[in-house]
Structures are given as structure tokens and as C-alpha cells.
Image (cartoon, rainbow, N blue to C red; front, side, top):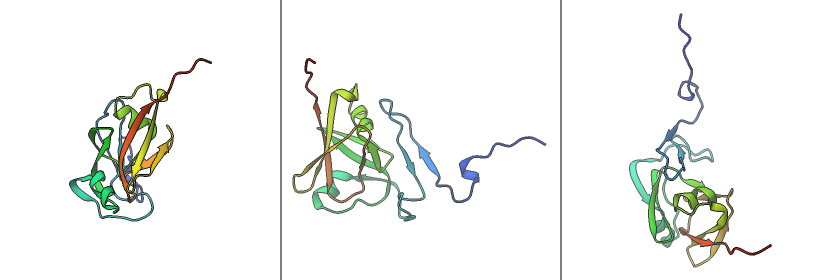
Length: 140
């Protein structure tokens, strides 16, 4: 009898994940069966949700397979509902990420800094877009 390899898809209760091709070294992964807080279903198959459009209205974007986000003046489509500050900077071509800062602009004009290892959630209400800024080089 052959040894068969088990995958996460064979294990009951495991969230199934869908991988996409890397973009600038970033490989977004999105759970297909859950939004991460226990809610299930509701994912709009094949739909691309425009985060900025929902953010300007102050409403929570629906769960989807892909999200359209804006970093500075460029739009990007990603297959995940959240990414780290580092992943966002790399997606925007801001490499090395340590030389840049990224913040999220919220409905109403507030901006929140996102650390390199902090997660930006595209599915929370009010997130409009992301802005980058080069960090100053100082002599030390």
C-alpha cells in the first residue's frame, strides 16, 4: 500500500486557503471559509471589492476573494483581506521597507501609522487608502 500525503484540505475543521502568485515578493493568502473571527460564508466569488469606495462611505467592505486597494496613487488587487505594513510597502515597490513609513487614511481624514509588522485590515469600516513616506536619513 502506498503512503498517501495528507493535506490541510483532507483535515476537517481546517480553513482552506487559496494562494496567489507573488507580487513583488509578497504572497497574499486568504482563508476561503472564514473571515478570521469565526463568521463563515458570505464570500463573493469572483468579485473584486473596492476598499476605497466602501471606506469613503464609511461602510464595512463585504468578504471577497479579491480586494482593490490604493497605495499612494496606484491601485493594486490583492487576494487577502489584510496585509502587514511591510507587505504593503513591498507591493508598492518601496524597498527596503525599513526606509519607508506607511499609514492608512480613514474616512474623516484621520491617518494611522502602520508598523512594518502590524496588520492593516482592509475589511474594517472607514479604511480608504494607504500613503507612504520615505524616512529621513540622519547621521548618527
